[in-house]
Amino acid sequence: MRAQLSRRQLLAGAALAATAAACGNGDEDTPSAASPTTAKPAGGATSAALDEAAIRRKVASLLVVGFRGTSAPDWMVRAVRDHGIGGIILFDTDQLTGQKRNIISPAQAKALVSSLQSAGGGNLIVSIDQEGGQISRLNPSNGFPASQSQEQVGAVNQAAHTTAWAQGLVNSMKSIGATMNYAPVVDLDVNPSNPAIGELGRSFSADPNIVVANATEEIKVHRAGRIKTSIKHFPGFGSATGNTDFDVVDVSSTWKRAELEPFQRLIDTGMTDSVLVAHLLNKQLDAERPMSLSRKVVTDLLRGRLGWQGPVVSDDMQATGITERYSTADAFTFAVQAGVDLLVYANQQVYNTKIVDELLGVAVQRVRSGALTMAQIDAAVARVDKLRP
Image 1 (cartoon, rainbow, N blue to C red):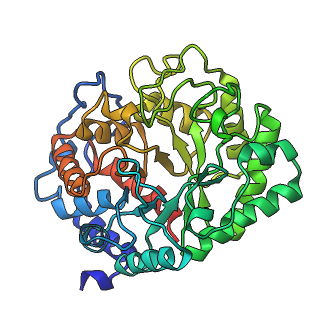
Image 2: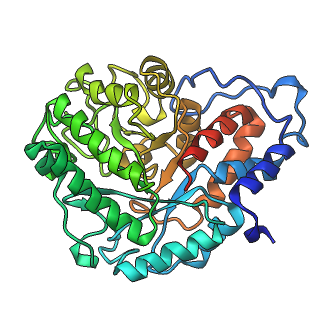
Protein backbone atom coordinates (compact mmCIF):
# COMPACT_ATOMS: atom_id res chain seq x y z
CA MET A 1 0.00 0.00 0.00
CA ARG A 2 1.12 3.57 -0.72
CA ALA A 3 0.96 4.60 2.92
CA GLN A 4 3.38 1.84 3.85
CA LEU A 5 6.14 3.18 1.58
CA SER A 6 8.54 5.84 2.84
CA ARG A 7 8.64 9.22 1.14
CA ARG A 8 12.18 8.47 -0.02
CA GLN A 9 11.00 5.24 -1.71
CA LEU A 10 8.15 7.02 -3.41
CA LEU A 11 10.39 9.81 -4.64
CA ALA A 12 12.91 7.29 -5.88
CA GLY A 13 10.19 5.54 -7.87
CA ALA A 14 9.08 8.85 -9.29
CA ALA A 15 12.63 9.66 -10.28
CA LEU A 16 12.95 6.40 -12.22
CA ALA A 17 9.70 7.17 -14.02
CA ALA A 18 11.04 10.55 -15.10
CA THR A 19 14.67 9.84 -15.95
CA ALA A 20 14.36 11.40 -19.38
CA ALA A 21 12.28 14.32 -18.23
CA ALA A 22 14.84 17.13 -18.01
CA CYS A 23 13.99 19.91 -20.44
CA GLY A 24 15.82 23.23 -20.87
CA ASN A 25 18.48 24.54 -18.51
CA GLY A 26 16.28 26.64 -16.21
CA ASP A 27 18.74 29.55 -16.34
CA GLU A 28 16.58 32.20 -17.99
CA ASP A 29 14.50 34.57 -15.90
CA THR A 30 10.99 35.38 -16.99
CA PRO A 31 10.55 38.84 -18.54
CA SER A 32 7.21 39.93 -17.12
CA ALA A 33 4.79 39.42 -14.27
CA ALA A 34 2.06 38.45 -16.70
CA SER A 35 3.18 35.03 -17.85
CA PRO A 36 6.06 32.62 -17.33
CA THR A 37 8.63 31.96 -20.02
CA THR A 38 8.05 28.75 -21.94
CA ALA A 39 10.47 26.71 -23.96
CA LYS A 40 10.26 23.54 -26.01
CA PRO A 41 11.31 20.45 -24.06
CA ALA A 42 14.94 19.65 -24.85
CA GLY A 43 16.10 16.50 -26.54
CA GLY A 44 12.75 15.67 -28.09
CA ALA A 45 11.21 14.70 -24.77
CA THR A 46 7.83 13.05 -25.21
CA SER A 47 4.66 13.09 -23.15
CA ALA A 48 5.57 9.62 -21.93
CA ALA A 49 8.95 10.87 -20.72
CA LEU A 50 7.32 13.73 -18.82
CA ASP A 51 5.49 11.27 -16.62
CA GLU A 52 2.62 13.01 -14.86
CA ALA A 53 2.81 10.84 -11.74
CA ALA A 54 6.50 11.64 -11.34
CA ILE A 55 5.91 15.37 -11.70
CA ARG A 56 3.07 15.35 -9.19
CA ARG A 57 4.94 13.26 -6.64
CA LYS A 58 8.09 15.34 -6.78
CA VAL A 59 6.34 18.71 -6.69
CA ALA A 60 4.10 17.58 -3.83
CA SER A 61 7.25 16.96 -1.79
CA LEU A 62 8.12 20.67 -2.17
CA LEU A 63 4.88 21.91 -0.58
CA VAL A 64 4.21 22.86 3.04
CA VAL A 65 0.49 23.31 3.67
CA GLY A 66 -1.59 24.67 6.53
CA PHE A 67 -5.04 23.50 7.57
CA ARG A 68 -7.81 24.04 10.09
CA GLY A 69 -8.47 21.54 12.82
CA THR A 70 -7.14 20.18 16.09
CA SER A 71 -7.29 16.79 14.41
CA ALA A 72 -6.33 16.24 10.80
CA PRO A 73 -9.15 16.79 8.29
CA ASP A 74 -9.62 14.17 5.59
CA TRP A 75 -8.27 16.39 2.81
CA MET A 76 -5.03 16.91 4.71
CA VAL A 77 -4.61 13.22 5.44
CA ARG A 78 -5.01 12.55 1.72
CA ALA A 79 -2.52 15.30 0.87
CA VAL A 80 0.05 13.69 3.15
CA ARG A 81 -0.71 10.02 2.48
CA ASP A 82 -1.67 10.00 -1.19
CA HIS A 83 0.09 13.04 -2.66
CA GLY A 84 3.13 12.94 -0.37
CA ILE A 85 3.31 16.65 0.44
CA GLY A 86 6.58 17.77 1.97
CA GLY A 87 5.26 19.21 5.20
CA ILE A 88 2.66 20.96 7.28
CA ILE A 89 2.66 24.26 9.15
CA LEU A 90 0.89 24.62 12.50
CA PHE A 91 -0.80 27.70 13.94
CA ASP A 92 -2.43 28.50 17.24
CA THR A 93 -5.01 30.90 15.76
CA ASP A 94 -6.87 31.04 12.47
CA GLN A 95 -6.46 34.49 10.94
CA LEU A 96 -9.76 34.54 9.07
CA THR A 97 -11.99 33.36 11.92
CA GLY A 98 -10.00 34.30 15.02
CA GLN A 99 -10.69 30.84 16.41
CA LYS A 100 -8.25 28.26 17.76
CA ARG A 101 -6.69 26.42 14.87
CA ASN A 102 -4.30 23.49 15.38
CA ILE A 103 -3.08 23.74 18.97
CA ILE A 104 -5.15 23.67 22.16
CA SER A 105 -2.92 21.58 24.44
CA PRO A 106 0.43 19.78 24.39
CA ALA A 107 -1.22 16.34 24.33
CA GLN A 108 -3.62 17.27 21.54
CA ALA A 109 -0.89 18.84 19.40
CA LYS A 110 1.35 15.81 19.85
CA ALA A 111 -1.47 13.48 18.79
CA LEU A 112 -2.20 15.63 15.73
CA VAL A 113 1.42 15.59 14.61
CA SER A 114 1.77 11.87 15.28
CA SER A 115 -1.27 11.05 13.16
CA LEU A 116 0.06 12.99 10.19
CA GLN A 117 3.59 11.63 10.57
CA SER A 118 2.13 8.15 10.45
CA ALA A 119 0.24 9.01 7.28
CA GLY A 120 3.43 10.42 5.76
CA GLY A 121 5.73 7.53 6.57
CA GLY A 122 7.68 9.46 9.21
CA ASN A 123 9.42 11.91 6.85
CA LEU A 124 6.98 14.82 7.12
CA ILE A 125 8.41 18.28 7.81
CA VAL A 126 6.36 19.58 10.75
CA SER A 127 6.99 23.31 10.74
CA ILE A 128 6.05 26.18 13.00
CA ASP A 129 6.88 29.80 13.78
CA GLN A 130 8.30 29.59 17.29
CA GLU A 131 10.39 32.76 17.42
CA GLY A 132 9.69 33.61 21.05
CA GLY A 133 7.63 36.48 22.42
CA GLN A 134 4.54 37.42 20.44
CA ILE A 135 5.37 35.11 17.54
CA SER A 136 5.08 31.82 19.40
CA ARG A 137 2.48 29.31 18.24
CA LEU A 138 3.19 27.27 21.38
CA ASN A 139 2.41 29.62 24.26
CA PRO A 140 0.69 29.82 27.66
CA SER A 141 -2.77 30.08 26.06
CA ASN A 142 -2.41 26.50 24.85
CA GLY A 143 -0.42 25.04 27.72
CA PHE A 144 3.20 25.82 26.86
CA PRO A 145 5.71 27.97 28.76
CA ALA A 146 6.04 31.67 27.99
CA SER A 147 9.18 32.80 26.19
CA GLN A 148 11.01 36.06 25.74
CA SER A 149 11.08 37.83 22.39
CA GLN A 150 14.24 38.00 20.32
CA GLU A 151 14.42 41.70 21.17
CA GLN A 152 14.50 40.91 24.89
CA VAL A 153 17.13 38.22 24.37
CA GLY A 154 19.27 40.53 22.26
CA ALA A 155 19.10 43.21 24.95
CA VAL A 156 20.69 40.78 27.42
CA ASN A 157 23.13 39.52 24.77
CA GLN A 158 24.73 36.79 26.85
CA ALA A 159 25.42 33.37 25.36
CA ALA A 160 24.26 31.44 28.42
CA HIS A 161 20.99 33.37 28.53
CA THR A 162 20.38 32.88 24.81
CA THR A 163 21.13 29.17 25.07
CA ALA A 164 18.67 28.69 27.94
CA TRP A 165 16.01 30.68 26.10
CA ALA A 166 16.49 28.70 22.89
CA GLN A 167 16.35 25.44 24.83
CA GLY A 168 12.91 26.42 26.08
CA LEU A 169 11.73 26.92 22.50
CA VAL A 170 13.20 23.60 21.42
CA ASN A 171 11.69 21.74 24.38
CA SER A 172 8.22 22.98 23.47
CA MET A 173 8.64 22.02 19.82
CA LYS A 174 10.08 18.60 20.56
CA SER A 175 7.23 17.85 22.96
CA ILE A 176 4.77 17.85 20.05
CA GLY A 177 7.05 16.43 17.36
CA ALA A 178 7.76 19.62 15.41
CA THR A 179 10.82 19.25 13.18
CA MET A 180 11.40 22.72 11.73
CA ASN A 181 11.26 26.24 13.12
CA TYR A 182 10.93 29.27 10.84
CA ALA A 183 13.43 31.13 13.00
CA PRO A 184 15.59 32.91 13.93
CA VAL A 185 14.72 36.31 12.53
CA VAL A 186 18.05 37.84 11.47
CA ASP A 187 16.65 41.10 10.15
CA LEU A 188 18.39 44.18 11.54
CA ASP A 189 16.09 46.30 13.69
CA VAL A 190 16.82 49.45 11.71
CA ASN A 191 13.23 50.71 11.90
CA PRO A 192 11.77 50.22 15.39
CA SER A 193 8.38 51.36 14.03
CA ASN A 194 8.30 48.53 11.50
CA PRO A 195 4.89 46.88 12.14
CA ALA A 196 6.11 43.46 11.02
CA ILE A 197 9.43 43.34 12.89
CA GLY A 198 10.38 46.19 15.22
CA GLU A 199 7.01 46.76 16.88
CA LEU A 200 6.66 43.03 17.55
CA GLY A 201 10.10 42.64 19.11
CA ARG A 202 11.15 40.09 16.49
CA SER A 203 14.73 41.28 15.90
CA PHE A 204 17.68 40.70 18.21
CA SER A 205 19.15 44.13 17.47
CA ALA A 206 20.10 46.74 14.90
CA ASP A 207 23.71 45.66 15.50
CA PRO A 208 24.70 42.81 13.16
CA ASN A 209 27.20 41.49 15.70
CA ILE A 210 24.44 41.00 18.28
CA VAL A 211 22.12 39.48 15.69
CA VAL A 212 24.71 36.98 14.48
CA ALA A 213 25.94 36.04 17.96
CA ASN A 214 22.47 35.30 19.30
CA ALA A 215 21.24 33.61 16.13
CA THR A 216 24.28 31.36 16.24
CA GLU A 217 23.56 30.26 19.80
CA GLU A 218 19.90 29.67 18.96
CA ILE A 219 20.72 27.56 15.91
CA LYS A 220 23.22 25.48 17.89
CA VAL A 221 20.51 24.57 20.39
CA HIS A 222 18.07 23.69 17.62
CA ARG A 223 20.63 21.46 15.97
CA ALA A 224 21.33 19.68 19.23
CA GLY A 225 17.59 19.04 19.44
CA ARG A 226 17.43 17.85 15.82
CA ILE A 227 15.14 20.71 14.78
CA LYS A 228 15.91 22.52 11.54
CA THR A 229 15.90 26.31 11.35
CA SER A 230 15.31 28.92 8.67
CA ILE A 231 17.02 32.29 8.90
CA LYS A 232 14.72 35.05 7.73
CA HIS A 233 13.62 37.30 6.01
CA PHE A 234 16.12 37.45 3.17
CA PRO A 235 17.37 39.90 1.93
CA GLY A 236 16.27 41.98 4.94
CA PHE A 237 12.88 43.11 6.30
CA GLY A 238 14.09 45.42 9.06
CA SER A 239 13.57 48.73 7.27
CA ALA A 240 10.01 48.00 6.08
CA THR A 241 7.02 50.14 6.97
CA GLY A 242 4.41 47.45 6.28
CA ASN A 243 3.69 43.73 6.55
CA THR A 244 3.64 41.56 3.41
CA ASP A 245 1.05 39.30 5.03
CA PHE A 246 -1.48 42.07 4.53
CA ASP A 247 -0.06 44.44 1.92
CA VAL A 248 2.41 44.94 -0.91
CA VAL A 249 5.52 46.30 0.84
CA ASP A 250 8.30 48.18 -0.96
CA VAL A 251 11.66 48.74 0.75
CA SER A 252 13.42 50.14 -2.32
CA SER A 253 14.11 53.50 -0.66
CA THR A 254 14.95 52.20 2.83
CA TRP A 255 16.86 48.92 2.41
CA LYS A 256 20.64 48.97 2.87
CA ARG A 257 23.14 46.35 1.76
CA ALA A 258 24.29 46.11 5.36
CA GLU A 259 21.10 44.09 5.94
CA LEU A 260 22.72 41.21 4.07
CA GLU A 261 25.49 40.90 6.66
CA PRO A 262 23.78 38.53 9.13
CA PHE A 263 22.81 36.18 6.31
CA GLN A 264 26.29 36.22 4.82
CA ARG A 265 28.02 35.59 8.14
CA LEU A 266 25.71 32.75 9.17
CA ILE A 267 26.17 31.11 5.77
CA ASP A 268 29.94 31.55 5.93
CA THR A 269 30.17 29.95 9.38
CA GLY A 270 27.98 26.98 8.48
CA MET A 271 25.20 28.08 10.83
CA THR A 272 22.41 27.89 8.27
CA ASP A 273 19.93 25.06 7.62
CA SER A 274 17.73 27.02 5.23
CA VAL A 275 17.01 30.60 4.20
CA LEU A 276 13.48 32.02 4.09
CA VAL A 277 12.93 34.68 1.42
CA ALA A 278 10.55 37.60 1.90
CA HIS A 279 7.86 38.84 -0.49
CA LEU A 280 9.19 42.39 -0.33
CA LEU A 281 9.59 44.62 -3.34
CA ASN A 282 13.11 46.01 -3.55
CA LYS A 283 13.94 47.71 -6.83
CA GLN A 284 17.58 47.98 -5.79
CA LEU A 285 17.76 44.24 -6.39
CA ASP A 286 14.97 43.55 -8.90
CA ALA A 287 12.99 46.27 -10.63
CA GLU A 288 10.05 43.99 -11.31
CA ARG A 289 9.63 40.97 -9.05
CA PRO A 290 9.19 40.57 -5.30
CA MET A 291 12.24 39.00 -3.70
CA SER A 292 10.70 35.54 -3.32
CA LEU A 293 9.90 35.33 -7.04
CA SER A 294 13.14 36.86 -8.28
CA ARG A 295 15.88 34.79 -9.88
CA LYS A 296 18.15 37.81 -9.49
CA VAL A 297 17.69 37.60 -5.73
CA VAL A 298 17.37 33.87 -5.01
CA THR A 299 19.80 32.43 -7.55
CA ASP A 300 22.14 35.29 -8.46
CA LEU A 301 22.41 37.03 -5.07
CA LEU A 302 21.70 34.38 -2.43
CA ARG A 303 23.18 31.36 -4.16
CA GLY A 304 25.71 33.20 -6.32
CA ARG A 305 27.12 36.10 -4.34
CA LEU A 306 26.43 34.82 -0.80
CA GLY A 307 27.28 31.24 -1.73
CA TRP A 308 24.25 29.51 -0.20
CA GLN A 309 23.70 26.11 -1.86
CA GLY A 310 21.17 24.67 0.57
CA PRO A 311 17.37 24.85 0.83
CA VAL A 312 15.51 28.10 0.17
CA VAL A 313 12.04 28.51 1.70
CA SER A 314 9.28 30.88 0.64
CA ASP A 315 7.31 33.06 2.98
CA ASP A 316 3.57 32.30 2.83
CA MET A 317 2.71 32.10 -0.87
CA GLN A 318 -0.87 33.15 -0.09
CA ALA A 319 0.20 36.41 1.55
CA THR A 320 -1.32 39.60 0.19
CA GLY A 321 2.10 40.75 -0.97
CA ILE A 322 1.89 37.98 -3.58
CA THR A 323 -1.81 37.48 -4.27
CA GLU A 324 -2.40 41.17 -5.01
CA ARG A 325 -0.07 40.92 -8.01
CA TYR A 326 0.05 37.30 -9.17
CA SER A 327 -2.20 34.33 -9.79
CA THR A 328 -1.55 31.17 -7.79
CA ALA A 329 -0.20 29.47 -10.91
CA ASP A 330 2.18 32.24 -11.91
CA ALA A 331 3.45 32.85 -8.38
CA PHE A 332 4.25 29.14 -8.02
CA THR A 333 5.99 29.07 -11.39
CA PHE A 334 8.03 32.21 -10.76
CA ALA A 335 9.11 30.96 -7.31
CA VAL A 336 10.41 27.66 -8.69
CA GLN A 337 12.08 29.46 -11.60
CA ALA A 338 13.71 31.82 -9.10
CA GLY A 339 15.23 28.91 -7.21
CA VAL A 340 12.89 28.53 -4.23
CA ASP A 341 12.76 24.93 -3.02
CA LEU A 342 10.15 24.66 -0.26
CA LEU A 343 6.92 26.57 -0.91
CA VAL A 344 4.67 27.40 2.03
CA TYR A 345 0.89 27.68 1.62
CA ALA A 346 -0.32 28.52 5.12
CA ASN A 347 -4.04 28.71 4.27
CA GLN A 348 -4.33 31.74 6.53
CA GLN A 349 -5.05 34.70 4.24
CA VAL A 350 -7.33 32.46 2.19
CA TYR A 351 -8.48 28.94 2.99
CA ASN A 352 -8.27 26.57 0.06
CA THR A 353 -8.62 22.85 0.71
CA LYS A 354 -7.89 22.15 -2.95
CA ILE A 355 -4.58 24.03 -3.04
CA VAL A 356 -2.46 20.88 -3.37
CA ASP A 357 -4.46 19.51 -6.31
CA GLU A 358 -4.40 22.91 -7.99
CA LEU A 359 -0.64 23.30 -7.63
CA LEU A 360 0.10 19.80 -8.88
CA GLY A 361 -2.04 20.46 -11.93
CA VAL A 362 -0.14 23.69 -12.54
CA ALA A 363 3.17 21.88 -12.18
CA VAL A 364 2.27 19.27 -14.78
CA GLN A 365 1.13 21.93 -17.24
CA ARG A 366 4.18 24.12 -16.69
CA VAL A 367 6.62 21.23 -17.11
CA ARG A 368 4.88 20.11 -20.28
CA SER A 369 5.01 23.68 -21.65
CA GLY A 370 8.69 24.03 -20.78
CA ALA A 371 8.16 26.88 -18.29
CA LEU A 372 9.54 24.56 -15.60
CA THR A 373 12.02 21.74 -16.04
CA MET A 374 12.46 18.45 -14.29
CA ALA A 375 16.07 19.48 -13.65
CA GLN A 376 14.82 22.45 -11.58
CA ILE A 377 12.36 20.26 -9.70
CA ASP A 378 14.88 17.49 -9.06
CA ALA A 379 17.38 20.00 -7.66
CA ALA A 380 14.72 21.40 -5.32
CA VAL A 381 13.73 17.90 -4.16
CA ALA A 382 17.35 17.10 -3.33
CA ARG A 383 17.73 20.28 -1.28
CA VAL A 384 14.42 19.87 0.56
CA ASP A 385 15.42 16.33 1.48
CA LYS A 386 18.04 17.88 3.78
CA LEU A 387 15.24 19.35 5.90
CA ARG A 388 13.45 16.06 6.55
CA PRO A 389 13.42 14.45 10.00
